[in-house]
Amino acid sequence: RRRGNTYSELLALLGDCNEWERVLGHYNEMLQSSSRENSRAGVPKPNMYIFSLTMNAVAQAGQHKVVREVLDEMIQRDIKPNAMVLVSLLSIYEKKHEGERALALFRYFQELGYPAKMNIYVYNVLLSALSKSEKVNRVQDVFEELCSKEEAIEPDRVTYETLITAHAHVGDFKKADEMFTEMCRRGFDPTDYAYAARIKAYAKNNLWRESVSILREVENTGMEPSVHVYNATIYACEIAKKWELALTLYSRMEEKGIKPNNVTKALLSKICDEGIESFEDKQRQAATLSAIVAAAGALAIRTGVF
Image (cartoon, rainbow, N blue to C red; front, side):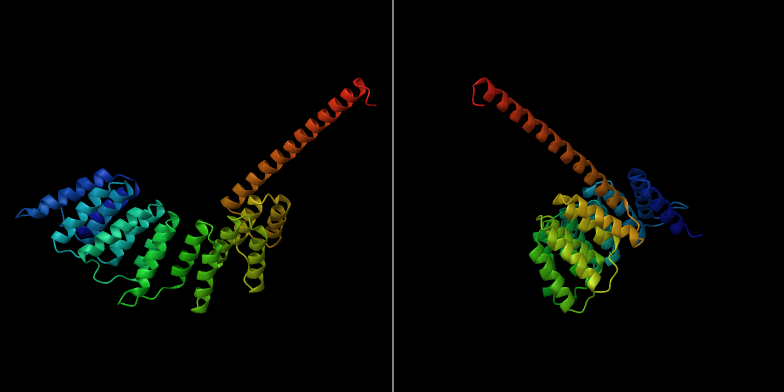
């Protein structure tokens, strides 16, 4: 087995275990060894994969300054990062919902002139990172930049669904619907995620009827609504305190053999808690009203009104 492979596997394993300091230690060992006239036996020269694994590990640990230091060292050694190196880093920030950091890193790569050619995968991960951070204005800016590039990078279905989701996060159902219409006009068939995002956009504005209408729209297309679509609609009912309708939708899920996930269970638990609390509030209100009526009646008798 080649030494490079062994070290790559070691760094990947340590990175998965969040042992970023040990990753950095092995990385520095490789740098020092490769800078000598005679490399230390058993220690390979760092290649693009080694640099990428190191940056991923320190990015995951929040060591953002170190990420740039490793990147600068990589370029100084004339190892040019490709699009997948950038995608790998952006994906980490996406999972951490750190959209601004993802954008800053993207801009830094652009300043350095790498990768030589961006692709739609890079933009989609960046848009997703910004979307999950609810940076909808940034999402729109990056999308417009994408569409205006001379390289003519064409947005795909994932691009549009990410935009729909971004607008849904902030409850902008008009913009979400606009992007949905544009996606369909360009010939992309929407998935359940696009429909679920639109439902959530209306839900955030307490427009539960419109949310339920989109569920029917999905059914009318011949597509079987997924657990994500049902969850979004149940969420809309929960927001509007339409608990009976929410439970009816859950029953329909069961009838169709759609397995609930953790989101479904959390929604049902919340609905049950809110329903019980509402019932208890009504009981307390009824008891208070009865007490007021009784007190008023006693006062009326004492004062001779009756």
